[in-house]
Length: 188
Image (cartoon, rainbow, N blue to C red; front, side, top):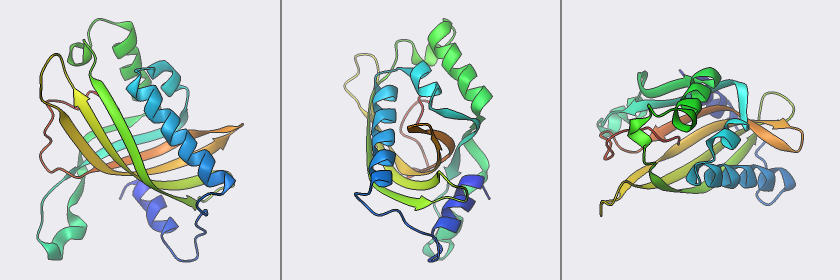
């Protein structure tokens, strides 16, 4: 089981404190997620990299369609679209921004990230929060008239860092078993 899923599962326990909607912490978390979406949509990847914790785990497991009775096992964590850490993410950022070898994103995709249904829970440590949100990404490439849609649920762990947060864990549970996009060279 992934570390992010374990953190979210622990947060779902009734004894776990849920951060109230509209509270200062809730608003700060939502603001962080919105700012992150802007940084990624505007391809400000180096600035986005500065929001990542050095112990980051960033994963997107595969999805498999299963009967209702087996729905709980539809997320396959032994195979992943990607499973990155801080170092590999920073390497991807450097490759995208500092080399000419990132052909999958040159020219870059035009994206729009919509973050909704944000739920925030107290984390295991002081200043740490477990966040569940929904994500819809639209992606346009070249001059094509088609638009890729990528939707899913994100399980994050955010850690307080000065007056903002650092993303320490992210697991993206995509809604699609078969992706309708040619690659996942963008960050979710």
